[in-house]
Image (tube, rainbow, N blue to C red; front, side, top):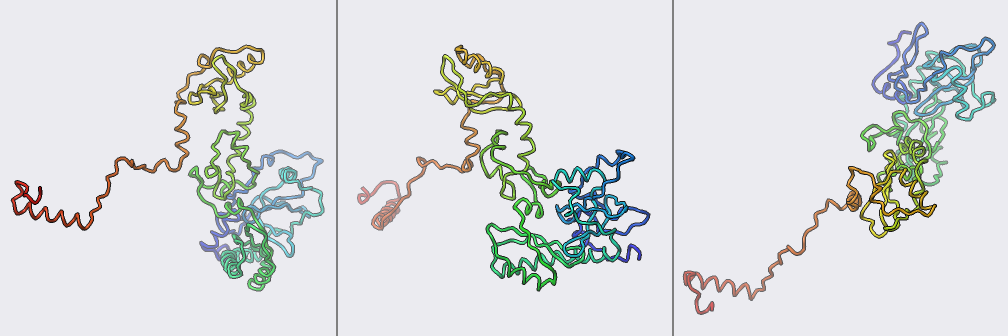
Length: 414
């Protein structure tokens, strides 16, 4: 069967992008790659592929296979078949078999298994059956085409059953015998009846798998506050815990609306520079230590980590911030322990281009009502209120003025 015998359309191409393929899988000849995997965010650089193995060492018998979205798994090769990155293979599943794309082979797989705490000699590692045949690929394409419609139908079924949950994605197994429904929920959900309805509707074995808010954002995608596409939707495949302490170490604002991403959790990018700030802050003294001078005690207000500058202010005059270098602060603390007290901090302050006198400007920037125009009550004009008697007298006065020509007041007006 030739390449054009497979049915490919734009919908199929779009569905296979979640598998890391720019296009639907094509047949190949002369050992060329089946799938184009250049756009997959699960790609791993195999820096060990050019390293020669010793003569006494056998090639590693496990490979890494990727599936839909961020799912990866390790499988054992039974015979001497050699696989390359990008090959489509049929692997063991429970039940039946599944179709995936080889992402790593060789000694680098051993390091990946050690990273994910997988024992290479464990009997629980599933097997690789073979390279996918043409019939396997055709069935796989049909299974992938069923996923968008199954997602919409399952959402409607869950909504009709009044279940407090959101179904985000459906992943069909390669042999069309099983489907995994990914969902998020705030509380525990009893979906036993839902499984029965879904199994009867789609005629497959149903598995419900709960995911977190970060995985939900990775599947939906979007634009971050930096103006670029979300990291979790483009390249970030594993999520590390993010705490508010990491934002505090990086001298960031405590406003939760600025620290939270589209998933409602703390931004993953808070982890990127945390180690750099931690190393830089090792040279900084304890910020709770007061500096004793003859003019008065000074307390710490803020720091610029990479400029190695710390701002202090006197307790009785906190509006005036004085920038001091880290070496100067360490020297003052050392002198205070010896009983030496400097005269003041003004003589030791460094020159800076930042205007530190305007303390209220920072608070004003965080005020959400700073753009509201406050109307001056003193400039308001009082509203005139006329009673019926006054309005009647006013009209009488106007008529009298018209009779006299408006030049002189009439006796009635006086």
